[in-house]
Image (cartoon, helix red, strand yellow):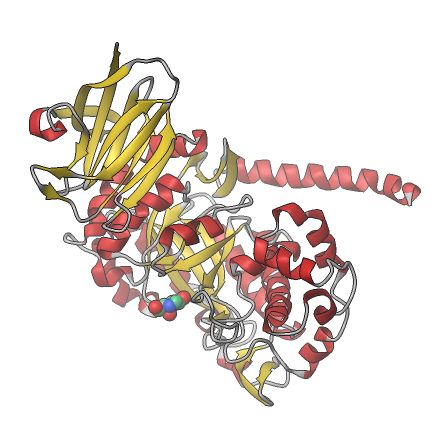
Length: 538
Ligand code: DGJ
């Protein structure tokens, strides 16, 4: 063994040099990539961190350039800088091997004219579990491109166990990425790629085709059990519990290692989808290496797999996806659930950066974006069906514009770990956190008997005893962390704005606006940007 490893050393060395060279080449060209900065991972574009203030289009809008024309100005009016844009296999490869990139070029061109960036959604083998976006030449050849079997019948879901489909999808995706590199390799309008959409088997907890049954009765691949062993302490608790409850085995069939039942089925399907999609992603990355991720249909707490796509990158099986290889850069939630903060934390863990390609927009999105970017160091935020609400009056626009103005600072403070975001309402009226040497007590604003119903915002350090805040409907008081016996008072509060990165102070806020020096207030009329400096006295 020792001899074999030693003899492989020059190979590893060469591989590292090649990967390193490829990476630095991509970075030299400023191609979008992820980078660890401080305690977090950020998207770097043209050498600088980039915060995606995005929105996802309805599924069919970007299939037609004329349809898109009036949409772009509305997106700009809401303050978007990035548009999550569907792109389907059926339109790119209408006949096998015959590619048509007219739509890709048109969308990139329109985005550039509208000063927008793009995240493309590769809608190919699966979308919402089903396979409606595969080209007809794939759909009609169900002997070559085999399907999932449920309850004894084939359904309109391509089987992730089918090698021919995997190769066909990967070929098309590679051709697409090659083309994007040709037309965008220097301008970087396209920031990232989502590979497929909300995958998993719908209608049953697993594929019951012959190939799937055979694989299910076979040994769990060593690659997976070795990963579980090596990452035991960091595994998502549900997966660890299930593996340990069945003896934390290193070998065995899927039921021996993970037990009987639909949770084992889900793990099996996660492995199948992950292997397939990692392969598609790898073939694309070999052509143009920009960040690639998958999104996830999130279930209700006790919903059984199959009622939501079984095998998608749920937190409880995300480690299975990671074990299948490094082809994907991160995993993301389509987050419509009410317990927004909890889901953010379920995805922002173990090195996985938070990005939600789909979430609620309007007033809910206008609040939630502060939490995602401020508290969970999000790469970006993206309400679904953005063109329905976008425009001058979309409340999301007030949040996006205010965040865009502080984006360079926010990105710095995400990396430094001294920014916090929060959401307040009647059920959660206050929150405390430590930042910049103080405990900040943030509560719903209230003055002269008028209380805010909700509040949201973010606060970051702005030098010693100073803070920058953005948001509305809350007030903040500070207590020093160190026991000094001193009291803290408000030195000054200024509202203001950033002009080309420079702070331009507006009104000095005092009197009713800071409750006679008792609180840093952000009233609920509009989204405010304010700075505060504190002083101490005996
Ligand atoms: C989630 C899907 O990913 C989207 O494409 C769209 O179908 C929405 N659901 C509809 O709410």
